[in-house]
Length: 275
Image (cartoon, rainbow, N blue to C red; front, side):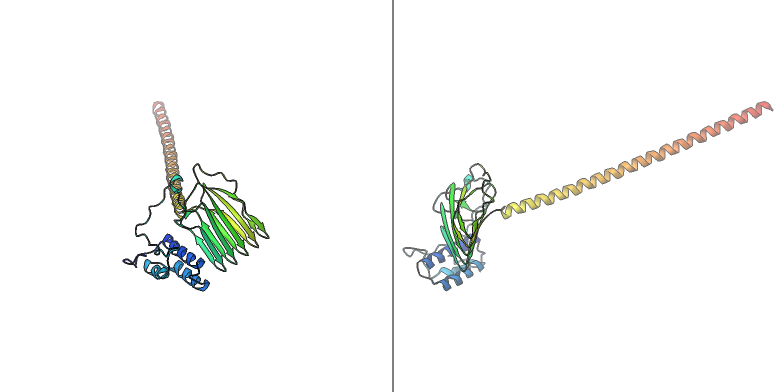
């Protein structure tokens, strides 16, 4: 854990690494359920490295009493749009999750393993893959929900296959059958739901939503500018038409005045000849 800059803000990935240590400690019997829930709540409420540091100070990271994982001071660069760059291999940064009368989250920058197992009893969980990397081109999310629920969130372009079984519950299959992008990973959702459910939802990332909002805002500005130009052009056309109409009216009046003057002059000349 970083000690020399406790005031720096922690990321979702930092909190997730600490939460993984707590889950391992619960499974090994180092923490009871009450201690686990207290520390997990403190983890997800932590805002800085200094708040995260004490949570796992007395815990090893797993078998062999290895030291707790450190928090990287150099953040990973933003992921690009290439799917190939997000299939990174390896074992995955988190392989399982449990929610017993509680909840869990996997979101942000994490690596999805080839098989991710999760269990919820009177609880719920969220597995968000929108900003995740993938250990393989095909990954399996195995969900067991007993009187609970889970939500799998995938980004556009990912192919989803749902193979779960529901008894007095169900698996959401609305996203199944949507073709994936070339080289995009394939996500298989399996498991069992009893008096519970597993939802599958396709959402854009926050960055993509922000980009689309900015595009819509720019389009709105462009439409306003176009309407303003059209209004100005219409006013100019109306003004020109009105001006031409007035000029034509003035020309007509001048022509009629000239004709009357010429007729009057002609009458005067005839009278002069008669006298």
